[in-house]
Image (cartoon, rainbow, N blue to C red; front, side, top):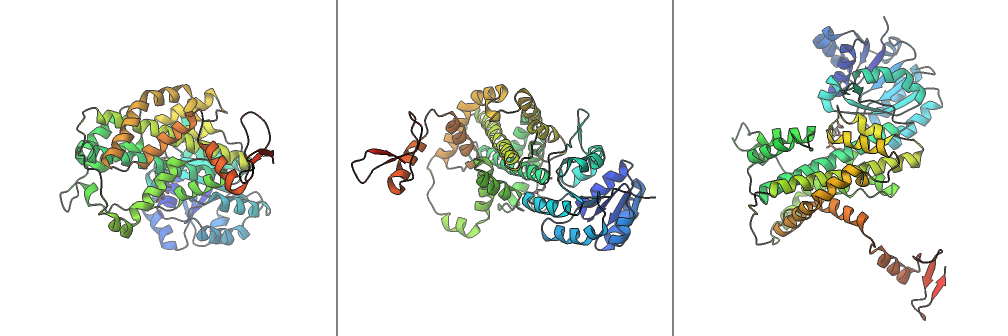
Length: 473
Ligand code: 6PG
């Protein structure tokens, strides 16, 4: 018997993906650099389906039916290249290597091009949902050729999460499109987490609520328009009491957030594409600030405002509104980045389809994504989600509360970079005139960089050092 698909790299994500495939009735070949892991998987979970363990790359490749589907689940970066170098020589034209790690899309483009020359399909695939998702149904974002999706799509759709019967898996676009979209997914994840963290911080330090009371607030929010996996687990984390000390868990965790890189890439890529993603950038920076222990220690003695907490009973509702509005902005920015990446690389990504496959399985899964799907259905080419009828109305309704929350945060000295940047972005887009006109004047003054006018076409320069007349540049 041959396996329909194979997984190499059997750490927790790879192992769970292999089990998911086996549980869905797909015979799966399994391989790991050290074969103890392969043995352990088959011993423990062999009863869940048909596993074909292989000790060597050669045996692994031999055990796959053709065209071969080989899923690589190793650490992104060097290890991925090492696995490709090891397996590619054993493959034949038409075979597929699926990279399910959190690879940088530029690496994926490079690998895809190199393997395409040898007739091998390289399918950079975003997989979201953590270990549980990998086992019970993740959200899957495959890139690579349309031809490879014909052979892979049905399998991946089969093991993906389903929402209303629709699989959370779709062909995103060619070469690095899948990993690009997964990267932005993670950037949005960072922004969403940061906004939730700021909400908690305000409820704690502006409204004076205790962690278990805040958990209740999040539970309530989770029954409304904010309903999402991240809100749900936030309530769990806040309600948890540390076993060793009996204190709220959130108070015993060191307040230095770590990151593996996908959020940072989202911002770096946005800078290259010229797309403003302040919500994601502030989320990355907030983690960075938190990690600078010496800097924070040095600055701890700086003065803050003298006022105390606000005990307004309506404050939690205001924070809910600020959170919803800021979340809309963060998602609008992330989707703008996907739109820009798609245009830059010619990927032709269907934005509504991305919202559709994020409704289930992934970390940012939420009721809200159905709204985004609907927005792109109504207007696939909308320049921003903010002007969609539903979102425009929601943000319009929320804005007074949102402004109050940002003002309260500033007044009380509670940092709220995510809420603030989202509001500034909203007001920038709305503005009739931006002070960018002044910036242009300054640039022309000190560097003769020229400017365009509102009333005439062309580039102009003012003779600042002379009689200040204008010349055509
Ligand atoms: C997912 C997650 C997953 C991983 C993040 C964590 O979609 O399942 O995004 O990919 O948990 O990369 O990222 P940080 O370690 O950078 O927070």
